[in-house]
Image (tube, rainbow, N blue to C red; front, side):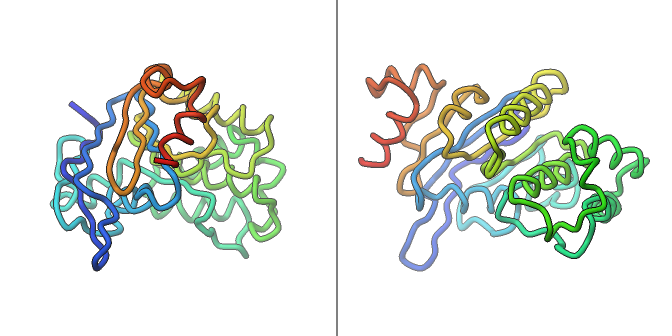
Length: 239
């Protein structure tokens, strides 16, 4: 059974169809990439999967349950991180994680926060206010927040945005380990093609609200007669 399954997902904004009949599935321990140029419909898709906006047509099922009918139960088992989402700037890093641990009803919250501060190498920053952090440091805090409830499904929008190459490599290694060893399902969007090639088992390319190509990085490169995934992206973006 798929952890996440979207069927015929469609969303319109006036005369514009942002997402047009999208089918998507993510299985246990699987990392799936959702790629495409700006305006392809990726963010709208993620917002529907997170229950932030309601699709005009289609359905979203997680853990075998309809998202609309089982919203609280389903959303308690997933989490989301994106570098563009603001955290409370006047709170210290540890305070932010403690607040979200309370919101998520995390068991043994103090121990969980301490473990994530260590895992994401945030210990030296725990007494720093979020507003004082660099963009890369905030990205790591976002990921720590997303891991607090030990989600079965992680939805990550540009998971290594603003990170330097060393920090980015550490985060990618961590995420792949969580998928492989702990069975976490992940759906990621990224414009970092080497990152997608390294992390993703399957990749979907979107254009004009539709999935236009799917497969592994190697399969997509072969299908588009391209040297790598970046060349595939350029071909999709340029029609």
